[in-house]
Length: 225
Image 1 (cartoon, one colour):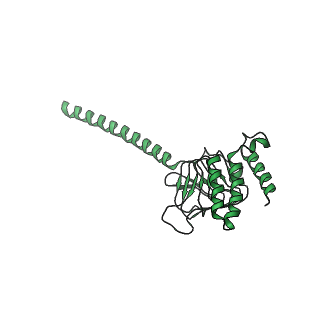
Image 2: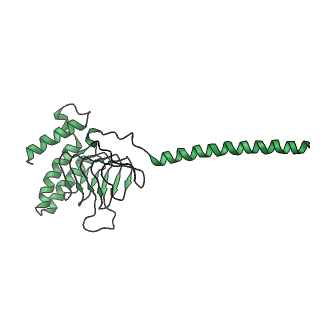
Image 3: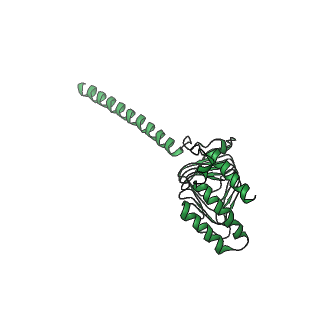
């Protein structure tokens, strides 16, 4: 895709996915727009073997936007970072088409791998604020990663993952993420377990009180006889 076409496409994507943007001119102030322009140039230089110049451009983008994308990362079309501060994408990360990231997301490594060290993100994936995806596995297409989750193993397509460590709580959600960017109404299995335990504890407490009352009544009866 040519440079001008890239600019037009970035404007289109940002206008589609951020309702706070009211004009094309506002897009030029947007961190995601700035960092992607830098990334596209740096990536071409990186692929041509101009590693220092590529890193120089990407580090300038970090200082301007707070978003760090290694020029070696491979990113597809219609990629969108909302807000973006604190986003980190590692050198061997591969990101598909129509992917959305929110602030504080890390596509990183574990420090134990060599070669391919960073995750591969399938098409139409949404990764919510503060989520960390660490390792060289794949997150399948159309999946959602909940805010603050830490994902350290492969995620099949059409799944919802929440928690630390990340757990799959929904499968085969066929709706494309780019049409549903709801970060709030995701299930939380830990919270559900806590509620279940609280309910069980309450029932147990009531049963203990009931038994104690029966014992008192029995003692009273025995005392009278």
